[in-house]
Length: 485
Image (cartoon, rainbow, N blue to C red; front, side, top):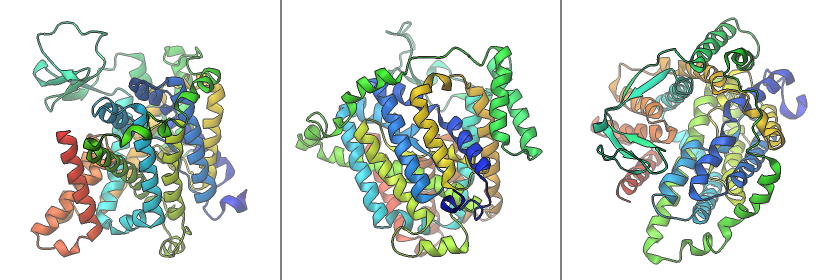
């Protein structure tokens, strides 16, 4: 095992890797329940999506671990599944079968741009200060996710700032809503504030944060995982840790319903009808572009943000291998593993897979090789049989580890020359829009666009790599299309 995963060379042990894998799995296991709920709104059977999520995540994560030998896990992306449901199906009017076909085409594009080294060329084209901003921005994003999941923040919005309720324009005079209130969209008038610590879950999250901070500062091995487990145990007498085993997602019902989504992308309702109407071919192509941009840069952001800083994708030997043809470096192999996962997901019936930023929780716990990913994949597979057990771990126990991981990743901000506006403005746009827009891709898009603007105005336009110009233009087109469709 040491020879295959090169544990000693990476400065890690079997025990550390297993603990890191468990930590990553717990940090991202929520997707098993959230993804079916989101995609289920399109008409897809939730149990089928549940099993498709597991199969695709296991396949992608195993390739990442066994082929690339890096500690990253893959699963359906949170922003991407929301785009699949609310924009593509409910907004643009595609059927869920057609949407799966679009995801499949996105997967093919990802494989092509990975095989032709376009994705790796993009990483080389990104200036170092923007790479640092992406790393720090992902840290701020993760910390914000942790604060939000811990319910440390509450938001207030007046009726005048509410834009829509349940996807329909809000009318302040309307007193009742059919089937209740599902989603509320508000404008910039929403005001954040520190929550009042008057609920058991909130108090538990605070206790968990203090416990995890103490463990981490004392440099206790496996501090994040121990923090999750201790917080879960503390939550039992507080009534937050629910020991009731849920049975909503059983393996039997999931297998039965999987036949509905398996290969649906290639059915007459999927790929067969996708190009049947000539007047929407442009819309189809732009939707595929939107999927591809988000998928590509979500993963690139995670690799850049964590891999360079921790040394996983660094070192003279590794950087030299990246310059050679073929899939020789860890980064080459990781990008390939990520690119094939989306295609696998669309075949079984789920939205785009991406490398999860929560992998940084396992990396923060010491994970450095593919053994961490293999452990995550095994736990995903076991979750098909023991999925009710996952509901025991409360969100309040996971949130503190995300906050700590975010804090550690934000250290890259110290290397950015904030006194130089030419560098500070793109870095700010990258990192803070990434965190507050709750989207890695949008942060990268903002950073790229403002980098081009600032460098051009400063008379340094020639310093901008041609690929950055091309991608920035694609982002602008993408935003324009989303604004008018």
